[in-house]
Length: 140
Image 1 (cartoon, rainbow, N blue to C red):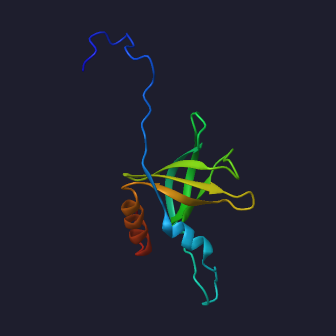
Image 2 (image 1 turned 30 degrees about the horizontal axis):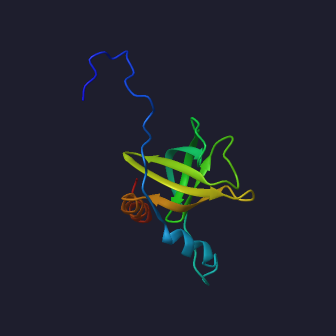
Image 3 (image 1 turned 60 degrees about the horizontal axis):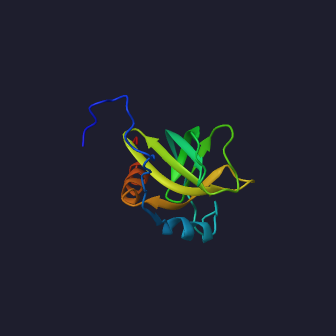
């Protein structure tokens, strides 16, 4: 279908794109795993990863908040930015080089870390590939 008058709106409603998300199992198991810096237990590693992020409160129509991605792992990320919501479900779009990862997560009041709860179907392998490269000391 092609509109021959580009100044005319032919739709009565704005179409919304439906994103299909899957539960991120690594986030749930990592959240339960004991954290230790002295050899015992499981240590979660945040890899430095410069990038950009756009964050929305899930279910709220807005322009979102721009933030700076500073580190990431399979279970979450750290962002720097003003006005990042706490104790609310969030929708995240992370941009690392040419890679874009979309997910859902939350940030508690006493932690600057966002824990992933869901990831857009098809993006999980992108996240795993990114973490694999970072763990080998390669640039994203």
